Image 1 (cartoon, rainbow, N blue to C red):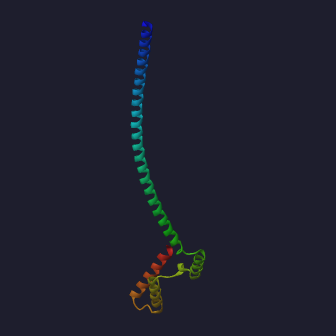
Image 2 (cartoon, rainbow, N blue to C red):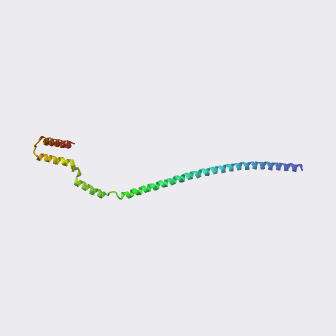
Image 3 (spheres, rainbow, N blue to C red):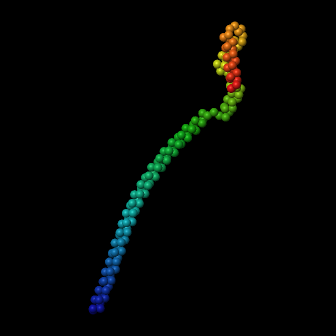
Length: 145
């Protein structure tokens, strides 16, 4: 009977130590689970903020893309008003035909008329001679340029 009692005490003591060990492991697991939960919550909040930032950046990019598309469409509409290659060639032919480099200014025409009048009028006075010399000199200066 003493042996049975001793054996029962050993079994109870062994079960008791195993129970304490399991309770300790359970407590550690609970602490680890709590830490994992807290980390998960923090990570969830961080990811939520990042997603919010990304969504706002995507919205801004969409707005910029829309603005760029609008500007591009405006440019494309304006190209309809550009001169065509054939139109430019026609203008080039007219310019070459008229040769605007040989046009004279109003001032040049007035000087030519004045010179011709002085040539036809007799040199009655010194003033006419001075004007004539001045005109000839001005024309010579212009031709040097």
